[in-house]
Image 1 (cartoon, one colour):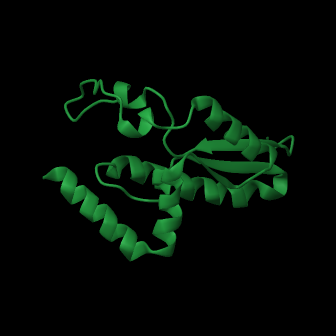
Image 2 (cartoon, helix red, strand yellow; image 1 turned 30 degrees about the vertical axis):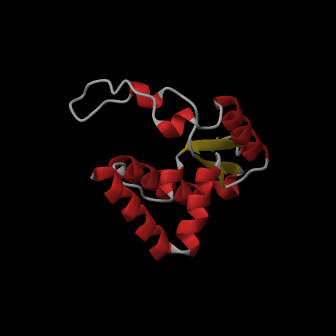
Amino acid sequence: MLEKKSGHIVAISSVLGKIALPERSMYAASKHALHGFFDSLRIEVFRKNIGVTVVCPGYVKTNISINALDAEGKRYGKMDKGQKNGITPQKCARGIINAIRSNKDEVFIGGKELLAITFSRLFPRLFMYVVKRVASKNTH
């Protein structure tokens, strides 16, 4: 890409690259790191006509939670409620393709869970309060 002075890099992150939720600390940390890396890379390569898009999907209806490992390293084997009600992989793919064609720096693809990003930015203290309340109800 550098030699040809052309190309486009796409990084698949997550809504959790922008917000934090309980029980997802390691996942969120890795996605936050992706944002920092690719945001910096975008600045480094833009003069070489190389685009960088960070894709932040919300829930996508896949088997990722079924195939995930639990704390003991065993297959979780259950469909997560978020994934079950998520958008189709085809809808997600169309959103990614449209973002590349539009040379977007960042794109959020999903359903109503995307509202959490706006909510957390506009009302950070209230967002954290709500997340903590939901988390405390789920642990009792």
